[in-house]
Length: 180
Ligand SMILES: CC(C)(COP(=O)(O)OP(=O)(O)OC[C@H]1O[C@@H](n2cnc3c(N)ncnc32)[C@H](O)[C@@H]1OP(=O)(O)O)[C@@H](O)C(=O)NCCC(=O)NCCS
Image (cartoon, rainbow, N blue to C red):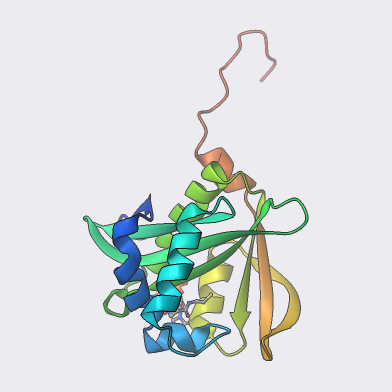
């Protein structure tokens, strides 16, 4: 994996991000990649956004480069024990094509594995969305299964969270009695 020359920082979404998220969500490429491609009206978005802010069922992280917002990653708990996080990502249209998606995704997954205590991540990618698929494979995901969501064929990709979790933890204290 090559590293990006650009540092992407992530922060949890806040009330002031409501309109920015609606703007990004209604970007045509983002709607086309989703499983509900219709345009989102402001009232529907406001209700959804308030519920997401209040929910412990996941989180949204905003990626920034030099303090400038470049995109978002949403993680939603799924599965029986809620320790699998379903990931979706979108970049602002003007931030695409600059290889910012992988550092944003990795930074957000690191934050999510810490804050939500999820042990694995899953993503659903519509067939034919080559950049999305390339992004998730490059970020350590692998194909798990095929699915159909809202009538749309997609691939389910998964990765475990452990390496991300370890990368955020301090190394274990060294002992002098070990045989290493
Ligand atoms: C998907 C998205 C986040 C990718 O970000 P991006 O800035 O367009 O893509 P990047 O420049 O970071 O490139 C991502 C990878 O796809 C590859 N790629 C780009 N176009 C490609 C194509 N047509 N075919 C195959 N791979 C392609 C790139 O080479 C890159 O891989 P690399 O880093 O190993 O070289 C962005 O396009 C987006 O927000 N799209 C709309 C929303 C969306 O589709 N979200 C995903 C739904 S889960």
